[in-house]
Image (cartoon, rainbow, N blue to C red; front, top):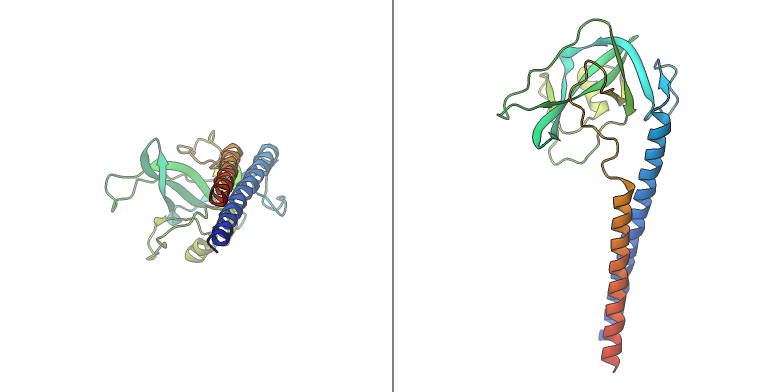
Length: 225
C-alpha cells in the first residue's frame, strides 16, 4: 500500500511539473508571436482612426488633435533606474473621438500625498506612437476615484476611465514615440519577459520531472531489494 501511494504521488508531481513546462513553452511561443507582430506591425503607420484594422494592436499611428489636461491619469508604481514614478496619460481629442495617450514616465515627489507637476501641451498637436493594449496587471488595491483629477491608478482600465471622464475612449492606449517633443522619459516595453527565459524555465521544470522520476525509480528498486 505504501508503494502504491508513493507511485501515485510521484506520478502526480511529475504530471504537474510537465504541465508547468508545457505552459512555459506555450508562453514562449506567445512571446515569439508577439515579437513578430511588433516587428512587422510597428513598421506600418496609419494616419486616422477610421483607417485602422479591426485589431489595431502594435501598429503605428499618427493623429492630429488636442489634449484635455483636465483628466490626467497617473499610472502608479512605475520604476525607472530605481526611482519610483508614474506614467502620465492624457485623453487626446481627434475629430470628436478620444484616445488615451501615454506620454511616458515622470518622477514621483518625495511624499506620497504629493503629486508631480504635470506638463501641459496646448493647441493643435501631432502625436505619433504605437497602439498598445492597456495595462492589466493584477493589483491588490482597487483604484478609488473621488471625482478629483489628476487621478492615481494602479491599472489602466479603459472602460472605467471612460465612465469617469464621460468620454468615448478607444479601447487601447497610444504609446507616444520617444522622438516626439512631448515625450517624457520612456521606459515602457511591450514584452516584459522574452521567450528565451520561458524556454529556460521550461527546461528547469522538465529536468525536475526527470530528477524526481529517477529518484522514484531508485527508491522503488531499493525497497524491492
